[in-house]
View 1 (cartoon, helix red, strand yellow):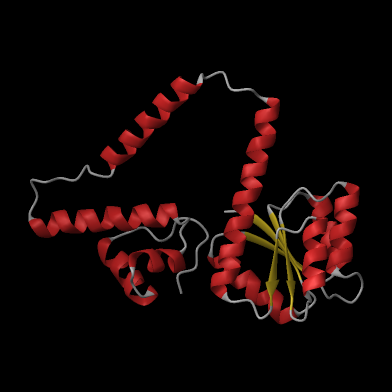
View 2: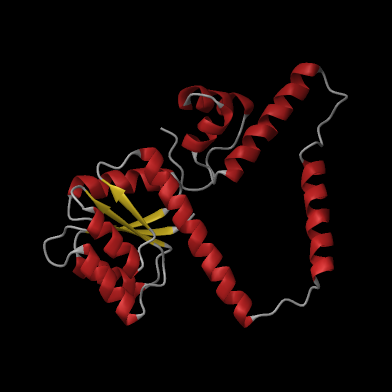
Length: 222
């Protein structure tokens, strides 16, 4: 889960992005103009910003440049526009934007861009921490620890009661299988459905049938 700031002057776009990202388990803050975006950035560092280019008071590129000059551009920013040009996209990228989405934004492109942005943000944060704290573990020791962790994970995924009747053993496996994917995808029904090849409605019924706990976390399964 991440804290995402959505900046767009169109009410419908803000509501749609809030619904999609909230369904993915993220905490979403909305801003309809640059002034509100500045206030949100001042209150704390979002993990990611979705920033519209064309806004009435200050356009997105100008706000991006303002954050860059002031040192406030410490988070990944994805620009959005319904009528942007290649020149605008290039300019935003040079200033520090990591991606450019053309409206109307498809669900697949949005989620992919958000995932890539959050991954880049985490990688940057880890790199910065490594500059401050040098690891005490030697490279060969680190490799050994990682290998042991991989073995433990593999074994834990195979611990099923084989002396049970086939139906019970199968249900136990399926429950563990879906719980694994739900945990891996941070509770996103959309991604789990895609990973397992099931329709969302079928997947939801299957999880209820297996007794998988769907109440954990702030997820919407409708």
